[in-house]
Length: 305
Length: 280
Image (cartoon, rainbow over all chains, first blue to last red; front, side, top):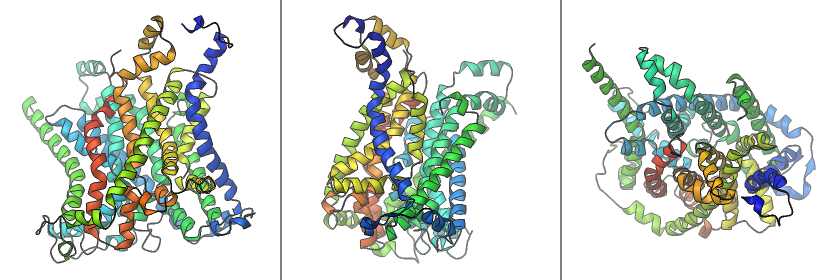
């Protein structure tokens, strides 16, 4: 063992203590630098008059960016859209992903190929998926209207992307579609980790399928579900690519969310101070969410966040 | 209900559910592929929407290689994505192993920091980095995207790798230690070989993340010869306004590499995530 290397200056005990840091140091240093610096920089920017066009005239403006953000006439709409978007997308992805995982957990012919196909959207880029949905929901040439007409559900084509309320719905559909596999794969892996002998006792006691699911399976896969929902909520809340690609926030900001608005503002006016304020708001909302979510799921005490 | 009918009912329900998910995934993909083989006249005929190309054409694909430099974008995407995924995988192995196998001061803080990195909106990382990269003359280089993609994919990959390590029985390493292996030797010679599926999974996560990224690419790269596939495709949106045939063809070509890779490796991903899959 390593104690044989007596030539080393550090004692064995010190080396033991330091060992974990050698493993995690590369990752931590890189992340602290590359996330820490931008994080601090953007918090500072959010209190400054920081425009890319006038970088020589950067100055403190106290809470002017925050005042501008909260008094923006779209603010209420943005907040409402963001919440609607994240809650419906996460909920639908979770339920559909859970359903998919439960179905895949059994044995059936062609399962391997089937699984490769239904998990495919994970590999797809939001950009291409966004374009595909924008094309499919096109009011004039879109296949969705055509199918609905053929099924006799509508008489005239719906202007999906031009109608307030519906345009955000298309973005939500696209987000659900692309995100089901992430839940599906994670929950499937958790299901396959459930030891089969716990079911045997339940079978002997004559437990029904539904009761077995709620009393045995669900507690076992709960940590996976909690972590997946937490991560997905954070990612979806901050994501803006689908909005930008499918609707550009239209019509008239009716499908705009906080991050997509922030992106549009940042690169329309190069006002990075204002973008910083929006960013800080997003992070505050997400931090509060994470704290509350981990508390009510009692996951904070597990020490594993 | 007797047992036989019960089994038959379950079978029918399962078939319906399986068909639902299959169609949900396949129909949009089908529509993209079919559109990519249609002529423009057929695509924008609002009177008759065709579910199979009347006139089958490869023009949309040919156009991609002649008008936009698809080959160049493919090369750029491969360089940036492969370098990112290799480095992310190696860093994740070390970081994940450290987090899984040791308890040390600051571990809880490290985990919280990983979670915080996920909360930072990407734009807030991109803007300050742009200013730094500009000073370091890194704008319009592969390095800018390589650095950004490595950093943004690392937290999730390292945490995932950590949970893969945690699923491997510690007894395996103890045995190696008794045989006189050092910790680093144990990691490379004993642990990693049984971690194959987990390593493949993490590599693929990083690959997909880098391959599909658009926003940072449009900001860090200016000249067309440096563009990656998503940026090249995005240029079609502005250039032809709505040339749906080309876009769907471009979409198919952009998704093909990751789709093929994913079809082959998705079982490793599930396997790697499954506790007890590795028999120690």
